[in-house]
Image 1 (cartoon, helix red, strand yellow):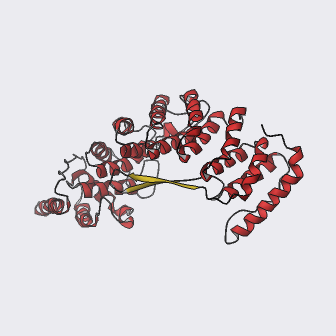
Image 2: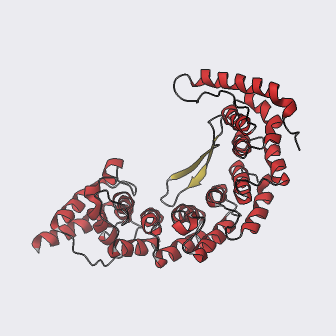
Length: 388
């Protein structure tokens, strides 16, 4: 008893030293399973390693710390330490379907995540949302966690919306074309569709990005999503414009490309932002839109990088945030275009040799591939369908 009392005192003393003067102590979360002395000792040792709501990378991923993280996340009053422990939970525990020597999420894990999602402190909420990804990925996710995350997406601050969108993507019924829970998928789609209209670029971009990743012709609100994708063609954010093209293509299905979509894709090849140009090129190639070949060819000389960074915002934990997007097919517009033209050549049953753009000879291979693509076009131009 004396040993446990001393450990509890150490927890409280650490909180008093490390917590900001304005931070109120967090309420204790009741847990069912007893924590052994070894894990309590490890928890006491971990406390001094938490800095700004994080442990170092190695500590955060050490499975040996898993139960100590749960103990701290449930019982430590300092938001800094609790937030760090929650991030550790998400890295060291696992779902029942996986086996990697990790503890499996249980009732105590669920109780801690539920409680900490309702914390007033942003860094604690951020950690709880990271820890929530595991139970959200279960075949039957916890309803209370779903409701808490959805509330953040629908009514939270912009940083909370972003973190909620990133967490809710783990729901299997949202990801799957044939969801186990169609009503839940419809609920998530509705919330993300509303988030696309957020004035904050990072919220809108991440919302439409996740919708584009799961879109199918028969998904909930498909018609409304299709109209939204059209309306976003002129959105001020290139991240939103690019993902709007991806969303429209996914909603059309893999084999159907309406003339209106073909025209939009070709028009996007002239977008002022290289990310959008590269994205449009990739979609044209993947769908075998031979009529788009003519507009693609000038982009073989476009050396602009397709990487797009959306930043300028602060996360829930107070740290600067940044979203990174890159057009499929390469880090430059000419690379994405080369891949697209190669796919179109295959679709026309007249393939040319396009070496993979990897390794030290990437530039040399790119130049060779572009030359092959231009030679192919010169030979096939008259046989290709005209541009719409």
